[in-house]
Length: 557
Image 1 (cartoon, helix red, strand yellow):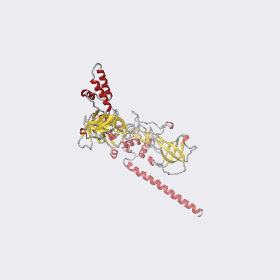
Image 2: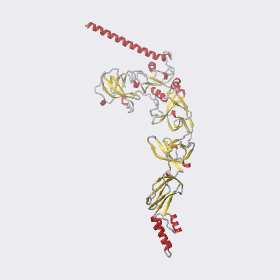
Image 3: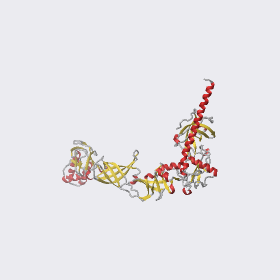
């Protein structure tokens, strides 16, 4: 191929490229015109829409240029809208506001005006939402009412034996078990029922000594008689047996142990023929007149329970019957997995129908609650540090309010402080309103601490030295970029679209990290890979920057 043909081919390729670029530029212009056509059709030429809350960014930039032309600034009344101008802000950096219109110091775009609400209010802690937007968002509100919360506490648990009704029958002297009147565990016994007969050889000698002394006559015999009685007590005989020996004048080498209460044999520790020692446990009895039920109560409701409170329990094992009782104690232990507190209840057990292991459902008596303010539970937003509600005000205005929430029950929440009766709170769409407030640069945010009496911020951009460091919890974004210019600790980068932030391809400023954390000798024209965090009210902060091979149009994360 000769040199002439190569030149012709190169010229043809250049012409095709120029035509393609011109077609792309014309298509973009047509698309932008079509996007702005509905907004332009909604208002006469040269005039602003009636509701500035519906403006697009392009319309806001047009308004800014008009304000520059007419010499308007913060505090003036815009003739096109009749509303007070609160200030100007960059939608990409909503926390920073400016007094005068102009070009954004952060992005390659004009600032957008921010207007006061209906009636000229300049309360920066509220947001105005048009009725059409409210309908699209499905906003629902409810009034703040006075009332007493019906705090009914329910719990589930298992039946256990009442350990305070246990009795242990023990041997009082060394002997031999001659007869058992109870043969198996869980046998029912009545109070006074014979349990065990024991032969005790040591009692024979003590009783015969006493009987021999009792037959003697003379001075000082009473002292000997009392000494003999003391030896019988020491051998383990009770007063009833000693009196019987003295009254009947004969030896009783055997003793029969009886049940001190009615119940069941929960433990049988001897058999016939066994040798027993003093103090050795023989039979354990369990009373069944009352039982315990240990219920798992959510720790948020445990404050409603007090010892002595009445409770009613039911169980599937005994259908159609309820058992009454009282709270005996709140045990000082919380289950870390279920966040519940164990409440020990004492239930009546007529007929002994409740036995250990049964599942019971318990309903506690409703404690008396003082009248307070109530709102639907859906209206309260718990951020972890505080509780908030979105207050609905006249003229379509909404304002986040911090409240002190109390008990929650039956879909309602007590409001201890922060609201007044008759106000209305938003039930749905609170976060959408907060997002709209964020885009318009309002300072009252659901996820930021409130400052009582704080005035709207209209200060100009702070110097780089005053920029607050980004929170460690702020997400980190990554993107390749072309370094356009360096000015001290600020760098201008041209980056491709960042889908995570919904940013188009643009040229904007970033804050550089300390000199020890960035490559030496950076200069304009280099391709870099950066990681950055957004900063509220300031340009993004670069946390990592390094040189990279040129990669135009690379995707950003």
